[in-house]
Image 1: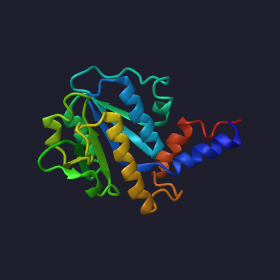
Image 2 (image 1 turned 45 degrees about the horizontal axis):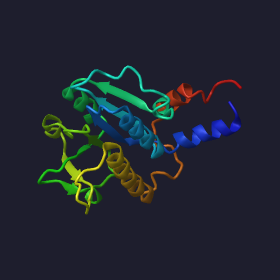
Image 3 (image 1 turned 135 degrees about the horizontal axis):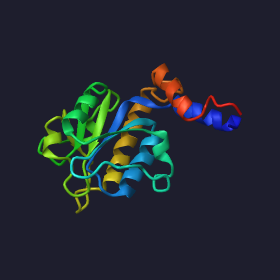
Image 4 (image 1 turned 90 degrees about the vertical axis):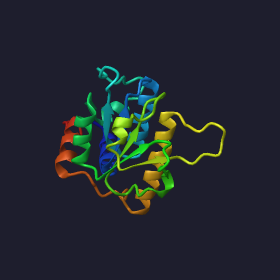
Length: 197
């Protein structure tokens, strides 16, 4: 491994956000999944939760379609809402879902600097009613056009970059590792940081 590669991996590890995650529920389109993965990696998200209660688990996430982003993320797959929510509640104090409900808040009203998992539903039905019951709130991305929804990958990108903005202001991307030491070691080993040249 070249010194440049080692520096790059260390830089990435030092900007990962251990208290910010994305949940995708029954997302079918592999292009949407790939786009979400790339955005997660871009803003320093390490944990991606893939919940499939209507479709089979993904056997693998293609390197081609995700531009290798899948290899840099920790992906958790679940086939029940209960097991997914149980896992999320161990790490994140808030679960917020994208949903056009009466009590939905604007994305820009949310505090995305607290430990939070952001839930995105599938291309047709959105987040299921059952999963919404487990969420602490729902939000919308303000829009002024005729069409009142965005593609999931676009909605995810807009949301994550608002989280990025808020966290940057608070100094969460100052280059000091926020991951636990044990997780840094695990990822360093997985990514080949300590391999002999």
